[in-house]
Length: 175
Ligand code: FES
Ligand code: FES
View 1 (cartoon, protein in one colour):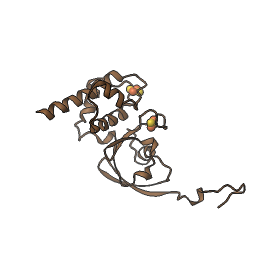
View 2: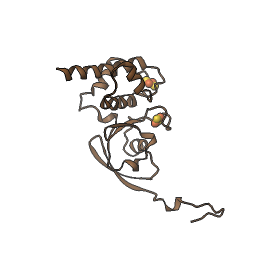
View 3: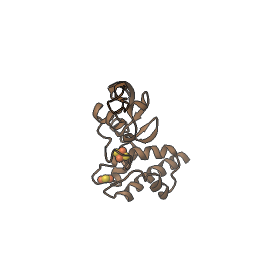
View 4: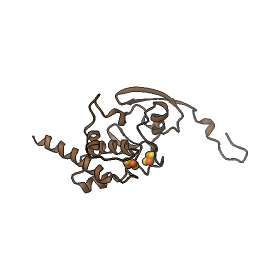
């Protein structure tokens, strides 16, 4: 279809809604979404999982970090439709019942937040970082967590919390 000025109108050929399935925090969820819906908006607006935060909506702050098939990604830069059938873990899915994930516990013990807005993204990113297995020193952690911005400047305690969990894991592995 062409508009009056000769420019092609592709919007008419796009489906207004598409059915996708995501396995979110262990539960299969189906939703009908517009193809341009970001994964972040799908989680927050369709599934009410508002733990994942929208900071910049442009891939610059890391507040929206979640895990998809075990890898950390910025959910604001990902269309939900691209992750049809994927396994998604958000901050709501990290604890085992009443038992917090070790990183959640360490963030509390190290006072690794102030306002807390960046915290879900920081923790999900740190889970991904640990799975990558490349962070050995505090400098590594700082470098590999540099996509997660904290406007409150809680970085020293964030790094300390993550380092403690990594070192605890290493000690357990040696036993
Ligand atoms: Fe996604 Fe800022 S909201 S990176
Ligand atoms: Fe406020 Fe990080 S704790 S932005």
